[in-house]
Length: 391
Image (cartoon, rainbow, N blue to C red; front, side):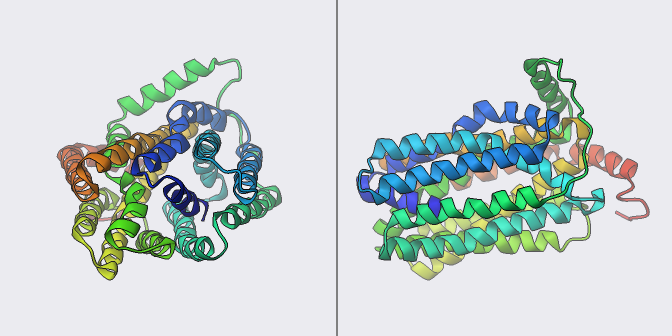
């Protein structure tokens, strides 16, 4: 709800696609610099306590945002500053939260289903939130959306406090320097071909493809001649497709075949973006975005699942922080570029460039896939995942 309301607020105040990109940039750029440190913390300290602190800070940011809007003193610089604060919070939240998932799963073979279910809940929120935000923005304004978001953090914090997680042993010695541990994480990911190529795929798609959502307010108002309701429904369509993708992945029995899913889902994502670029019909636009959401989410969840399955436990936090950098760290740069490009060549051509770039990224990945598959198979055999399973 906050994401949709903030995008609409920025566009209502400024009418600028470029400033939409700037807000997207400031809300995510800290991830590039801070998420590796968060990965080290996730491997050092108790993740549940870290998450309680982080979620409390996120609630404070939402309260400040609601205050400046409801009091009528909101200015674009305040939105940019609060977006930057949220970006700092998310830089620590995402890798630590991703690392925490494995602590709630007793058996490793259930990890893929757990990750997919976790993503399905996230996308269930993405499905419901934009619709509610569109209605609230049109009826009572953006400030109420921000206040409801602030209140919602209480449920998250209470849930974390109520959890009883078995104590895990610390894998890192506190005497190690942070930079030494960061170097270990980078070296491990770079030298492991499957991890390296998956991270590169996510990075390029996030940089060149996924920032298409920055242009949703422009399409809703200028192309489809709609309002906040239209914007909310478009974002709901993306969430609907993403939710279907995660539910499908959650129903799978194991991780086998996810390498092929990565390739197919990227092609589906690109096709959805291309169809949306040429659409000027509301229903067709929603179907196209649902297709794009399905492809994007199945790609990201598949990459996350494979990484969480094959990486060494002592490197989990640091590798997942690199995944966060590849995904969320590239988005702000892409958002800034998409916003600037749309102002120069228009939103339609910008989306077509995003589509072609995503296809180029998956083509490079597909060339490496046979060797990636060999190394992953060896790990699956060692873990007993494919014992007795025929190719």
